[in-house]
Structure formats: C-alpha cells, structure tokens
Image (cartoon, rainbow, N blue to C red; front, side, top):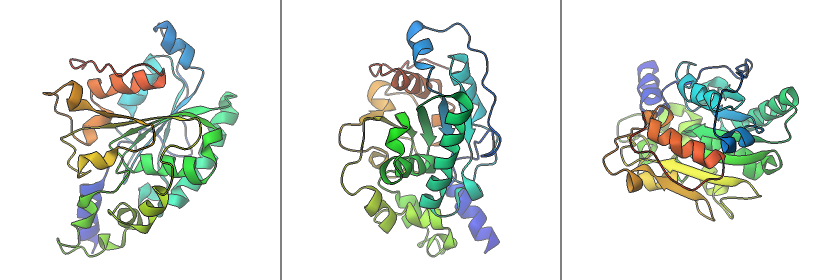
Length: 260
C-alpha cells in the first residue's frame, strides 16, 4: 500500500515545488529596477500556492522572478502536503491570506497557483468569501474540471486513488468538482487567468485546465507552437512566466516565446 501511494503521489504531484512552508513565509526582497507598470502592481503581495505532495524546493525560481519584478512574494505549502480534503486546505489558506494581509498592510493579494493549488485557491474565492481579498487569480495547470489521470488509477489497480482524498476530488465527475463548477466559474471582481500547456502529462484533457465565464484562458502553444512545457515546467518556464507577469498587471496576452 505504501508503494502504491508513493506511485500515486509521484504521478499526480505538482513536483514538490514548494520553497517555503505554510507557517514560514518568504521575507519580501527589496524591489529592483522594473517597468513602471510592474512597480505599480507590486502594491499587491503575491502568494504562490503549491500543489500536491510538495516538499519545499522548487517554487523558489518563480518566487525569485516575482521578487525581481518588485513583488512582495510568499509561498504557501498545502497542509498535509495537499493529500487531504481540498475544502479543508482552502480554509487553511484563508487564514494564511489574512496573515499576509496583516503582515504587509495590504487590503488584497494576488494569487499564482499551480496544479491542485489552483483548486484550493478557487474554492477559497467561490465558497469562502475570498473574492473580497484577492485581486488577481492565475492558475498554472490546475485540473479545474478534473483529470483522467486520477480516473485511470483504478485501472492501474490503485482503487479509488489509494484512499487519497485530494486525488478522488480531482477525478472527472467528482462531487467536489461538481460543486466547485456549479454556477459562475469566476465570481466577484477578481481577474481570472488560467495557463495551460499541450504537453501537460498530469492534466488530461488539457482543456480541463481552463474555466468559463470571462476568464482569460491561455494555451501556451497557441502563441508559441514549438514551445514544449510540461506540467512541472509551468512553474519554471520563462514563457509561462511572461504570461503570469502580464496577468499580474492586467496586460494583454503577449508571451515571450524565447524567454528563458
């Protein structure tokens, strides 16, 4: 059973890319020279929300990019490594948002969320009143409408996600997703952006990483056809980051296909 759970976590994980813990936030770096529009948007702290099974090592690259552009950046690790109930993780995230707001004096924050983290943040927005405290929501490869990778685990002999609740909730057709996606996908005045890639090996079909009702849904290969970006690469890839940066300043979608 332990081996099965390990296989499951590796197959659905967001690559353990968490550079901080939920209780230890990264100290804001001093802003460096940046375009005027980025400096203006930096008034909103940015919370990078990790995904399933992260062990605090690789979200630091995207956090460093954000700090380099002048943002006060924090990294949130899902409680219990994201294996448990997503609404419970969202309630914990709500408390974290309040901590960041209290420590920075900011009325609102922006959220950049990877994989399962996008579902946690979106549940916070839709079901826990988070639209009052979030200005911009950007998801990277989040299975907004589920993924067949979770469904297929039964075929591989792992039963119902080997008992891992978050995996069960990310299954296409789950009760959790039916509730999350009932009604308006994009409540409140939050600006919603989703970013996805054709090479995402964990969110299948990749169109399930988009949401409806006025969100800006960006497929990287629609702008950069030869750009190869995997699920984990969404938090490391330079082109993906140029989309994130544009979303945080309410700019047009203009990916830099050659960005490192």
